[in-house]
Image (tube, rainbow, N blue to C red; front, side):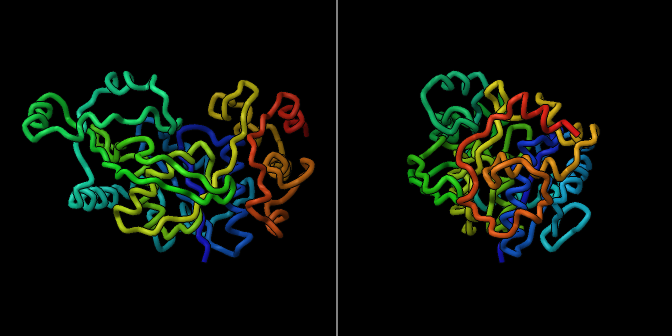
Length: 320
């Protein structure tokens, strides 16, 4: 059975860009008669705002995007909040350590930024790590350990990964794409790459639909799946919604948050209609229920180009 998920981070108000991914993920699952999981990714304590978890839940209910497992529902693979799953991430690290795939990294942020100007891919992850600490001797590590607590990096193999993306099509990544990456920060926080891999596998997620800003992080997750002998899900990456400033929608676009739209009396059916139009599923933005879009839904119907939301469209959305 198809199992999909929507996994938001409670670091800001849920906006139209988040809602687009939530809707498409929901449609992929519901059109196949599968199980839809809502998971809260809140391990980044510096960015997460616990009070926003309820806001996300309220926004999802307002849109009519129900879930089968997750907050308020429970389920066989819980808990469904990452901050309650830390023991699972530590267990995974121990397994990777036993396989010799981890090493301590003592590099400072300044040292890493010094290589950021070099040409590289993996835009969402920053510059590839140059492997500075990978070949340190035990003596060299001991010296550095006295000065600084290390982060933990995963050692990538020199392998090429190809993903048959459900929306973008086949996509190949160069060998060692992005370089060795952090799986646990020096402050003790587990990385997104590790947590999302462990959670998707533990929750038996078979299909992942997310924003295409995360496409370039896929080879890192595939490497973790491989190292831990876990089956990866099928991936589909949808184009983002862009603001007129040329950047993807984010917290700075406050008037496009779902909480703001709700407070001004905009009906959720109008929002769903706009999201369907933006995604290329309909020819015009007419009010719709999510269930109106499940019949005949196919990933190949989703537009493969980013959509720029203009001020005029914003005004039309806000009109009663």
